[in-house]
Image 1 (tube, rainbow, N blue to C red):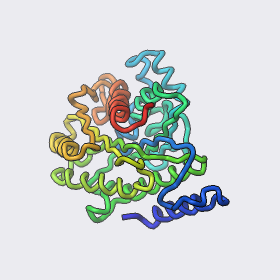
Image 2: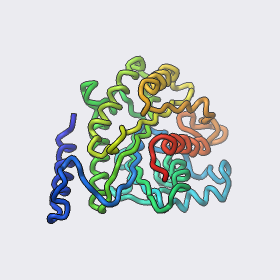
Image 3: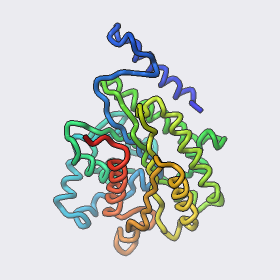
Image 4: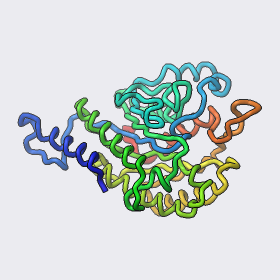
Amino acid sequence: MLTVATAAVIAAVFSACNDTGGQNSQQTPDTPVYSNEVQVVVLLGQSNAEGHTWSQYLPRTVGEEKAGEYAKGYDNVFISYACTIAENTSNGEFVPVKLGQGHTVNQFGPEIGIAEKIAELDPEKPVYIIKYAYGATSLTSNWRSPSSKNTGSLYLSAVDYILGQCAKLEEMDLYPEIKAICWMQGEDDSSSNSYNAYEELERNFVADLRYDLSYYKPADAEIGFIDAGISDCPAWTQYRVINAAKAKLASEDENHIYIDTIEEGLKYNGEPAGAPDIYHFDSASEVKLGHLFARELIANFLETD
């Protein structure tokens, strides 16, 4: 399942682990030992993961003080992000989570809500988010994983990006463990003719991601998968089928968590007033999406002691 580029990244990691001047001469390539383990959360998906929600609405929806907090950011939650590949990116660096890390520098994604809640945990234990998201993309095509054949280019580039950023953390003398993947996707598939294939495609996608990222899995656990349902926007004609597939997969796997965004009350029809962008969550709901991801991360996958 590994691509040539992915294999090269892993080979480089193995080489770095062995080239320690004898310091870790007893370790083998598949059992790296680092003194400073860090927790990594991966954020993937299309536009509601990327962040097409405008920061300018936050003072009205969450208040001036909270909007100011988001703008300032969180110095114990870091993110490396690539939105629509190169439209808005941290250029391969890990930077503190703050507003402006969405589709454009004037937009934000669920990383804000995730960071807000995680920052309340131990301030001495930073958490690292790797976000790779692209609007208007499908699991049928772009994110299609190797087990489904005809692997999508976005799947391949996402895996390479994640592995490359984990290797970068190792260059910083940190040992990354990917605790969970947060997935906000399915809108494009719901309005296509292939919506009935979503369950099998996502089952393969989750298994393939866990395999391709397994070098960085926790030693005693599986990589979690937190699966956000899509909205009931009129454009997503088969949203019930997509969300039912997500819920079914979660019922079969204790490490797969489904979030019902409709039941949780996330809205998409309020901004901008008079001509709402119904394809994307409103500002308060985009923050709440992050809170929901964080709730499941903290309850099920992150070490909080």
